[in-house]
Length: 143
Image (cartoon, rainbow, N blue to C red; front, side):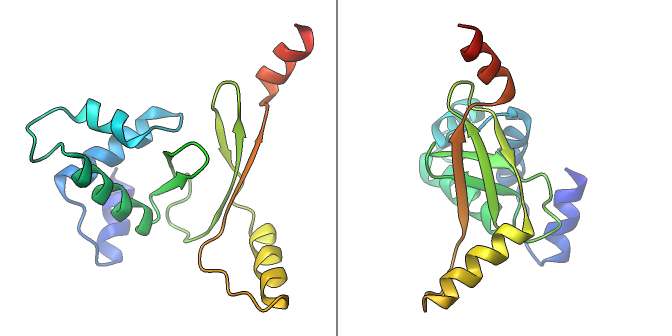
């Protein structure tokens, strides 16, 4: 958490108590977590735990590079390398929902170059790859 505070301070961003708590819940999950799951874990009064408040906190954390949104799961995961602004490539297990972030700069550059060659300006780049993790793949093969 101290790394997140330092990054926010260096970037001129304000990590409020609610944003901090939402970040703690995302980082503690170890699996993708939905906004309503976060809301349920926040509890508290309606003012601090309303859906729009949670979504605003998540948007802040995404913009700060501390959290990624996985569109295919409608869920959020913590970024393992928040000190480096980057796009993400994610391997998502369709059985156990384990997510592994690749964060491969070569893939990022390749996609940007291919888009540019087609006259397309990429604004946001997130690649989600669905499959089976090693454990689930072994379990499926032995079934």
